[in-house]
Image (cartoon, rainbow, N blue to C red; front, side, top):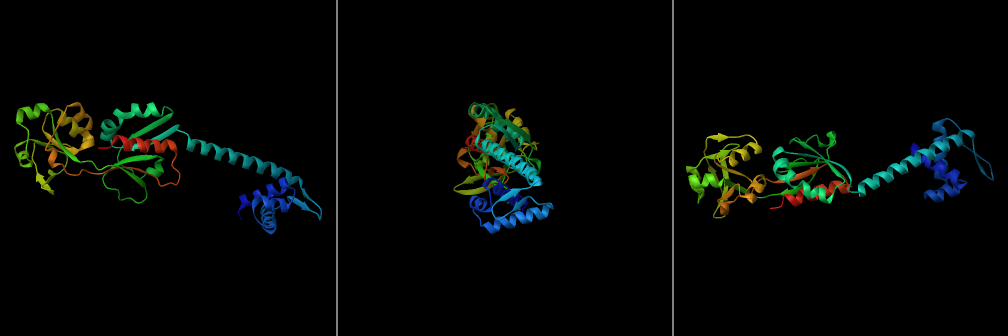
Length: 290
């Protein structure tokens, strides 16, 4: 049986003075209320109400059980109210999982703007890229680089910005600035994976097998090596966005930009997203716009 429904029927009978009033309050038939009470009494193994032709009386066990039911329903109402309030308010904790290089370069430099708008939101940032156990770990959001293939999660596209080729002004002054894609063959290219760089030429996507004396395995290391003037790098634009804006790096071959890897914010699928979580999602979209 649905014990909660039986408890509700019992409380309504007591508070409305009978089965007819309880049925009206619950929007069901009198016979349905009668059945709920009978099943509840059978499940409890005791009589809660005594019925006469003129009135309904509550037994001694019924009075104690009624007090317990009212306390339970009151606590449920308080919990639901608190939940609705937390859903509607821009305060509380939001936990975020994101790659280290995105946190350091793409997120942290902008957080002062987020806190200026939402001073009562507390961010809990975890560095990493394994989002498959997002639900089990209790994390609200994750920033993911690459196409989304996991249908267990809801997602929102942050950016499909371009790939950019960059170097320091000092490197370009010393070694010259490539004017065409083929010019890269005479330069030292820093790579983070097999050295096939993507470009567009005459409307077509082309791959160029570049070469260099340094391979690094993380976005942070790639950025650091490029800033040290060790060569030219090609990355998604958002990794170098702050450095390009500050003039620490210079983009080359801009007219040959190819599409970069997509970046998404993902989260457990839910019908109701708390406002504090929605605020973080919208902020991530804002700071990753091209």
